[in-house]
Length: 148
Image (cartoon, rainbow, N blue to C red; front, side):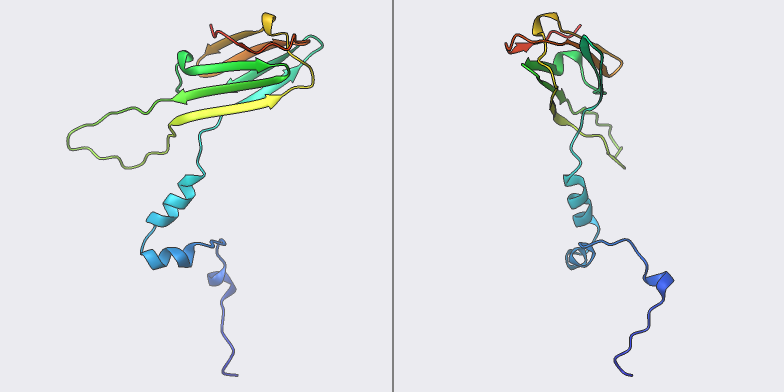
């Protein structure tokens, strides 16, 4: 009977956290926040639709200037990359309480079923959304697109 351990199912229920005990060795939540934030890479979210003639892509890239976005096409592979710049704003007597915005390079590449006609492609960037019109049947040449 001495080997029995009492448990309270309501108290002992908690989210599985494999680093909880490891973090206690270093005394604090600093390690947990570093491990959690390491996987927080900026991402480009997008919708892709298709009709008989072309593909249409809407990619969300908020907080980026249009000059910092690059789109390239190689046959049926489309690559979108953007550079998110960090803002440097310092006020005397003020400190940052929370910072969740990501800065750095974002890249997204995907392939489509048909080659793209790179001579007829178009791109537009308005209010943080990049819109691409990618006509089907490519000539196979790599081309970078100018964003309007």
